[in-house]
Length: 377
Image 1 (cartoon, one colour):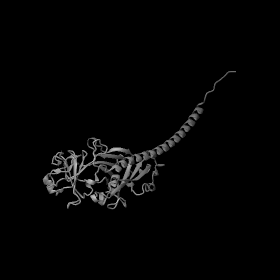
Image 2 (tube, one colour):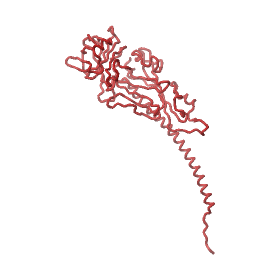
Image 3 (cartoon, one colour):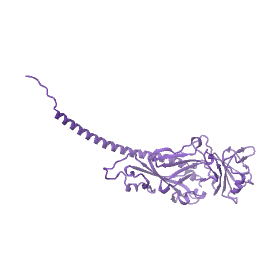
Image 4 (cartoon, helix red, strand yellow):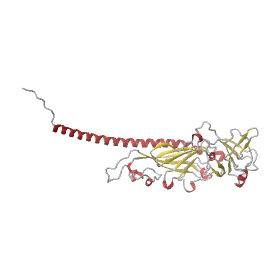
């Protein structure tokens, strides 16, 4: 009897290949579905993490806003005379410093419902090794002319280059009038501070007279403020880069200046409001947008700002396709968007047309201005 070997026929091989291909297609579909679900879940987690980090960064600076801002030095200021000779060190521009404000926090309302911008302000950078609490004193003798040398009861803690904030006492006929100049010479032996025109913040005598600068009386308060390189005060600004969909941070720290540094990606919107209390109160009774009278609040209104509330919107990076080409994305519906915040209005009409194809996570919080409240303004 002869042994013989039988192999697979061509038909059997083709059937096996078809079965294998079908199995592979099924496996790939399952894998694709699983991967899509995983990316959606991961994307949602990323949005949560990005929003949490963003809030931590903003909240840290806003809570510290006003640190070193010696509130006693400007407590009664209702009008501040200031000047810049066009140098970048005083913020650029010539004449009265535009936008000079003693507000611990400044909100810039987004145009046409766009993202708002939040700026925390300090007398100088709290993170700097050269940070110094403002030195406070009073004038020993009056200024017969606004450009006269300043003679104080003490110049301890004052240095060349410091900003000098002068404030009339409440007993003065000019109560509420303040002046901001820059020290060019400090002489401890005679307790004198000069502020001649070599300082970018110092106008000439003729310009001071033309601007009706105050001739401060004896006992007017004086604060020596260490300033950053670019501008009268240190500022850190948080804004939304709508093109990059990112939260950015900028400051005016001089040599280490940061401009539009990306803090976290996939942050698409930010809305903010001031918490306002009645005069001489610490209890907030209204929330307002940075519009109308609150675009550039007066010194009186600045003292009424006790907190800010912020709403952030973070987006998942995962694009979720519609079921087919004839249907729209349903990852986020208009009804879902309406519930993103209890108070903020996110203008979805300004978002990219495919905004429905992503998942979103909204955050909101109230941040008290501790330095303002503790100072009992």
